[in-house]
Image 1 (spheres, helix red, strand yellow):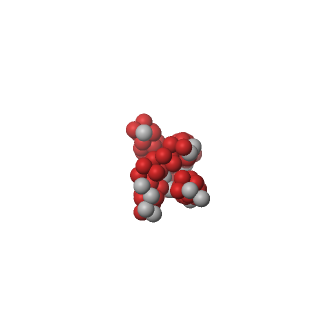
Image 2 (spheres, one colour):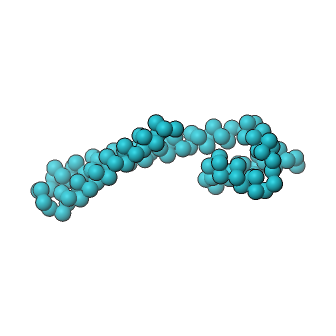
Image 3 (spheres, helix red, strand yellow):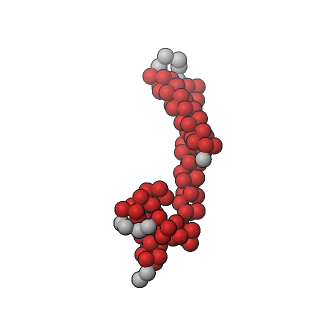
Length: 111
């Protein structure tokens, strides 16, 4: 088995384990592979594109969760009287949803 084949197998294992591309590169460097070998293996494989798409899906999912928090908070605020514990919980959910949504949108735009 050649070094390139070993690299491809190792990259696929680490992607399956949930490591990001920079973490994979660092792990491979610690295993005595050269930077050139690692770069060539990433260019030849579709792992880098798949790993990037995975992050996009996770970002979209967390944005949906933020929308759920906002909706749930608004429903609790409209259902329960002002000053009750559930109304306060609705405000907390609303604030968490808005903050999480802003954070995630900013993170997605930055990438």
